[in-house]
Figure 1 (spheres, protein in one colour):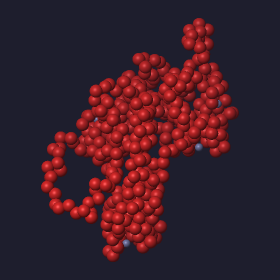
Figure 2 (cartoon, helix red, strand yellow; figure 1 turned 45 degrees about the vertical axis):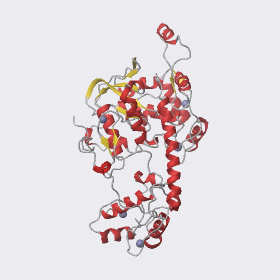
Figure 3 (cartoon, protein in one colour; figure 1 turned 90 degrees about the vertical axis):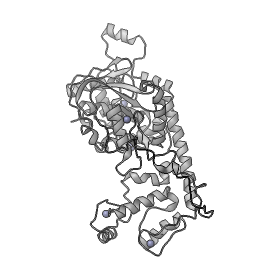
Figure 4 (cartoon, helix red, strand yellow; figure 1 turned 135 degrees about the vertical axis):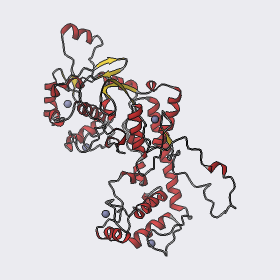
Amino acid sequence: MEPDATNSISTDDPADGLSRSTIMGPLNFAKDTSAMEPPTSLVNERTVPCMFCSNIYDFHSRDNGVDQYLAHLYLVHRLIVGDVKEIACLASYCYYWKDKFHTEPVEKYCSAMLLNQLPDGTCSNNEKYFLLSDIEPLDYELRQRLKKEKLELVLARHQFERTDRNYRRDCLYCRDFRSETRPDFISHLYAKHFLQLGKSEHLVFVDELIETVQEKLNRLICLFCEKIFKDRPTLKEHMRKKGHKRINPDNHYYDRFFLVNYRLKQKPEYVPIAQRKEESRVFNSDDDSDSDWSDWNGEEQTTTCLFCTHSEAKIDKLKQHMVETHSFDFAETVNGMSFYQRVKVVNFIRRQMHIRKCIACGEQFADLHSLCEHLVAESHHRLDKELSGWDQPEYFFPTYEDDQFLCHLEEISNEDVTPSEEDGSIVISEDVNARINIDAESLSLEGFNI
Ligand SMILES: [Zn+2]
Ligand SMILES: [Zn+2]
Ligand SMILES: [Zn+2]
Ligand SMILES: [Zn+2]
Ligand SMILES: [Zn+2]
């Protein structure tokens, strides 16, 4: 297989001439601000290497280099990065792990799991996949550090962009304006041309934002609805008439330009690994010798509710409990879903509850109590089938070790599910034509939306 041949830049390209061009023109003191200009990223994000091979990706590319990168990790190296959207600087994250994996095996830091399918969905027995997530303490620390470093960078950059007086740039529309500062430029666009990019005090990385806007307009793309027009006058007319003189709020590419998106969110209290192990014991039985007892007694293991600590030996009683207590109808929720999708639904709900995030709207809470109040108050004991937050490969991996709920999914589907332990991996045997990303390398990977 020739992975991502069209989307990556070969490393075999000779280094360009940059390092050799040591001769410069005379320096200009007034204009030479580069020495004190704060950087716009923590690391080089334009040529990020794969953690395992020599493929290289541009994280700022228009054809979404990040998605290409994540798809490549999954399809070629069988690696899934958990909660990837929460990583403040994915490029730094990738450099860090590339360095680690250079000398140490993936197994050391990742959870492994066997699925009976290849990444393209073809059936095949016991295929191994890896999950890299903040369950691993090094990963957790890395994510925390990147969040802080990124916030510091953003604040320094924002401060600079508000005050720097060397932003000389011609207006995107008229000929008689030339800015001195970024706020000037933004307010001119608004005051003279009614183009709303946002208030400059809320914006950061303004240079890249303006470049992006300019490029879209040059390519005759409407900023708001992103349709393409045949010529400049038609585009201008459309944007004016339809009130489309602003950027598309649904395009998450623009998130990076708004300060508010870098705010350190209210985080749930850190649950150390040892305690997580404790929590996961909720799903085992109270007593270590239980497995012997259950063999001896023929007793069934209990299954814990997806939303509270209530448990039942009979899955039907538990489902009834969820309907009565939480107005959550599991059968209806997973109706029409494939086996693997059901697995993902269960693991997703467990994960959200564990990290104190609403399963319907994704809002973050500081503790379980306020999350539960919210679920009741907003009737959010439900999954939004359209918002596919749950339908990500990372949710193949059980949130809790030995989650009995996963053993009962066959009762709806009449398929064979036999979770069992085998050198630390959960084996789910199934002969199903479950589709994950069957479009293989060509895909733009819905599941990897950033
Ligand atoms: Zn690779
Ligand atoms: Zn102008
Ligand atoms: Zn439009
Ligand atoms: Zn419950
Ligand atoms: Zn909610």
